[in-house]
Amino acid sequence: MQVSVENTGDLERRMTVQVPADEIDSQVAGRLNELRREVRLKGFRPGKVPLNVIRQRYGKQVRDEVMQQLMQSRLQDAIGEQKLRVAGVTRLEPRPEADGQFEFVADLEVFPEMPEIKVDDLAIERPEAEVQDSDVDDMIETLREQKRIWNAVERASKVGDRVKAAYVAEVDGERVPNTGRHEIAPVLGKLESFPELEGVLTGLSAGDKKSLEMSFPESYRHQALAGKKAQVELEIQAVEESELPEVDDAFAKEFGVEEGVDKLRADVRRNLERELRQTVSNRLKQAVTDGLLEHFGDIKLPDSSIQQEARQMLMQMQQQMGGQGGQLSPDMFREPAERRLRLGLLFGEFARQNEISIDPERVDAKLAEIADTYENPAQIMEIYRSDERLMDQLENLALEEQVVDTILDKAKVTAKSMSFKEVMEQE
Image 1 (cartoon, helix red, strand yellow):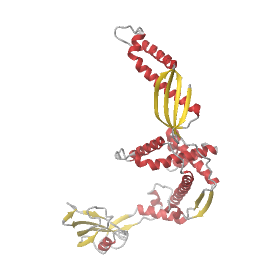
Image 2: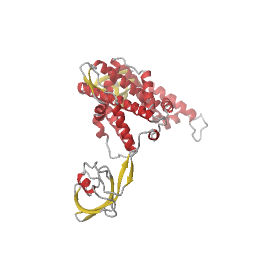
Image 3: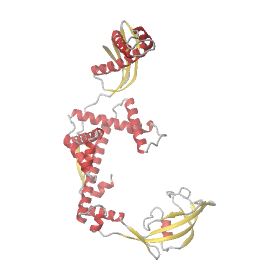
């Protein structure tokens, strides 16, 4: 086999491969002989069909198949021989045989030659925070809010009450809605985006009716009223005050914690600590990736790989949309596809240059962390370990974390003391 390669662009190569034509002839003859034993044709006994009949009927098809298979196999051999990192094959076609040689041409796109990935001058800020008792108290209050109950009262509404009301509006002579009435149930004191409504509803009781002109905000949920001034007929259906549950053992049981309040607080703290670790990890990874892209963002990428990545991102989006999104185009994902592809190359090259390989202990720790968020961790771990695809994803995540940790060890990292809330609010 003879191979020649020419550069046709920054990342484009044209490869010409020659193999002896008799190699094709030999394989074709072998296939035709196999067909002769297998084919059943009318007028001939099984296995006794003359070879010239087989060649006449199947010769071209067999030769085309042999040529395609030979080109594919010899192309891979040639790529290995030339030590090319091929991103894609954009053209593969045979040329006419000459001087007893079969020749084909392949147009290839290759990955770029990667530079040394130095990260010593990357400046990264590491948030440092701890979960305090006050953070646990705040989450307990959030849980109480989830269990808040509302009871109807026979009095005028005030801040903190929920007011159920129904209304119709008239805009430019048109009734909104066309039939029936719109219903709302806002909590007074939480209508920052619609203070006019807050003022109208305060001080009213169940059964009260009111006719007034009202200006609706641009962000109002009903498009026919958004940003409009309308004549409104309003009726109060109910005024309700809220009641928060006591934080006791019965409250803990509402969240599946049979052991009581102390265990609930411990569980809340553990969950907050896990969220904090993940948020800090995400922040650091973002800083690392931003730094790498800033330093190595001019690395050229093969267009075929960008297109493939964009198509995969489109498919993922459509799956998340339940098969919808047929109007979306891969071109819409080109920029994030370039980012993902470039980062993949940079992470992979950094791992290679620093001899980083997948750490089984890191994979196990990652699996345990994921499983711990479920009610039956052992079952989740078994599901992962029995699914090769899930384990591949887990190993890739673990390797990615190892790369980020190594970069952080080499980069200029400064600690920044922050509260739990400050870390989480910036996420």
